[in-house]
Length: 274
Image 1 (cartoon, rainbow, N blue to C red):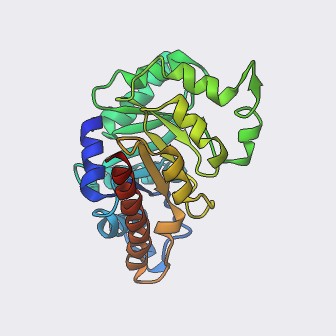
Image 2 (image 1 turned 90 degrees about the horizontal axis):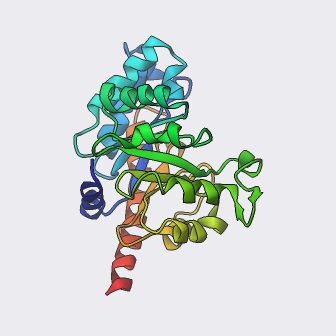
């Protein structure tokens, strides 16, 4: 999916919601365990309940890889079930030397046909560039994450800037706003405005809303740009909103709350530019 299509989808749905399918087989409703593929059965119900409310689905591959072949089969079935025209993200956080990075890129862009993959930039240019050589595909580089350990490296000073600022500034030289996004944690609101100033045109994937306590209002006011420029991810707050037979109904209600709030912020942004 190219940038124009993504921006158009956000405007059409009045949403920048990304639903995280971080599906833990130990947390899904018990009645699904009788299915041949319980994880896919759960994901299918969530997708059916939220497909008109979100613009993206993010699949955290760790929840699938841990189940071996069965998990990869569930992942593939899930990706294939997501409707055409919805932005798909492999949250795989890959990052390795160039020839290995190329194989990772082929895995997620060719074999599984994701639109984007998260990438760890620690090993530098040759670990990121292979992901930028695929037409209408995106690398989503870890910028400033929401976990406690972000303080260990990302928030350390390197000369007159933080390390995360150096990472974002340097990475922007390798790609363009048409193929490069950044992960910016929702709990890092004190840094959001500065990051938007540093990368005014790039999309941000923002995890940490909902279960991790990030504020959608703050994120939207501090980091939205003329194209919206945001994909705000909610995982547990949506997919585990309920755990009974009607879990998908509860998931839809949770997603609707996010979408309605997002529509309001998008409307406010439009009125401010008029």
